Image (spheres, helix red, strand yellow):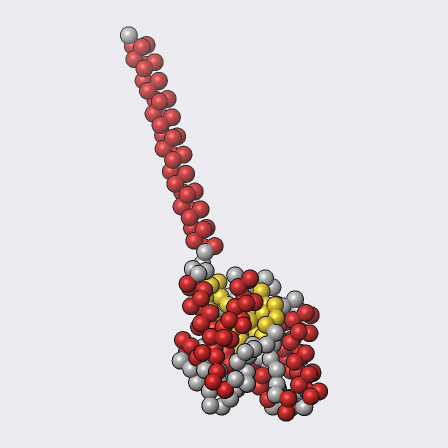
Length: 227
């Protein structure tokens, strides 16, 4: 009789041990599920798109919500894409000024970098070689800090009164740099807006809110394939 009780207790112990192992496995599964969920959440965290440029990017004369980077953010949000637009535009910025400012903005992670600089250099008639050098320096710094970032360059043009040769050399800066650095090129940021009075403010240089919607479309044509 005693022997039967001992055998019964032994069997019961094995059964309980098996249950314990099953519970432990279940808990481990839950832990793994939780870890997987956290990993998914991390992957879906917003990535930054940095627009780095002049008053055209800053949206001079407009409400911040009307500047073309903000219009693009609205489009991104409507598509539920995990990207946050950072407007790094500054009125009056030259390529040399941008070179001195870029490191501060690169303190935050950058997944996509959109470079819109050079317009003020052109309006001031600054040497094309110097503008090219400054833009390349900015590009090099972005590459060094975020080698996996995707790069976009906004092409610009100057009025013909700057001289035919200067205008041609200036226009050529952007496709040359884009090709050299494997960047996506927006051929001309102000396409369909530059020189159109009703789409520009009184100064004839900065787009109206309607004009900036067109700028946003010019950028989106290139940007959408990177998202």
